[in-house]
Length: 161
Image (cartoon, rainbow, N blue to C red; front, side, top):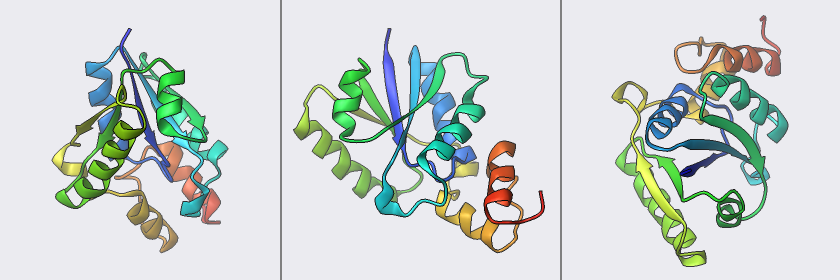
């Protein structure tokens, strides 16, 4: 079985992330969406909340599951018996950072491959940062996130559900 890890903070998960998950699920036997603790980013949602949001959003995809992890990604990949890491690239601006991460992971363990997938063009402008900003300002984020995430954002920000 060929397993791939799709790591991220997913704060929050958005439709661009889900598009990458669906694309990876067509290529690999199993996709693990790995929610990283990454407290350095000052997340809006706790790691447990982010995990639950991802779990619910991917539950109907038979070969996809959510987990959360802390520590080195390459160690997590090897612990899960995965053959690769998948990362989404929205624009050229994402490439430099993602390329550096991929090279560092390869240096840490050359058996860990990184594959880059691009989302549908309709999602290339969507980011978790923008989704949170729109939500904080009272805007409608339903076109950009699954319903469970939209609901969680309203609750977290003290807005009417």
